[in-house]
Length: 128
Image (tube, rainbow, N blue to C red):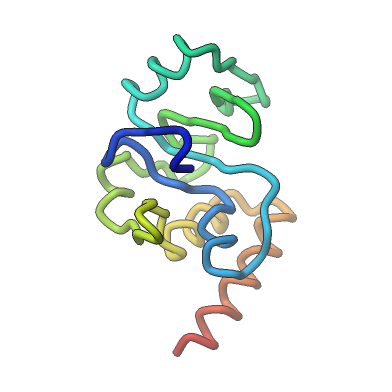
């Protein structure tokens, strides 16, 4: 993450990244919720858009996917500022809270989301 040299306050690790950071499960990519300015800069640096269907068209490079919104047609659509208010900083990197990841996964309700919901529930139950 730090090698991307993103300005402080301009990105949040979301998707499965917070699950990996908490040691809940591994992930094969890193999803980022970023400001429009960050996306514009990375586009100039050669990152490419990838149409994954629906509203999911991130800017991608290597294992990174950058999104300027978190609206995939679900009932969960936080603004960058809303999500930023609940981030957890780990080794200088802002991660979305597990509660926010949970809300997104419940709203999405795909099979992989249901599995992650169970993992988050178990993790939070052990943390009490």
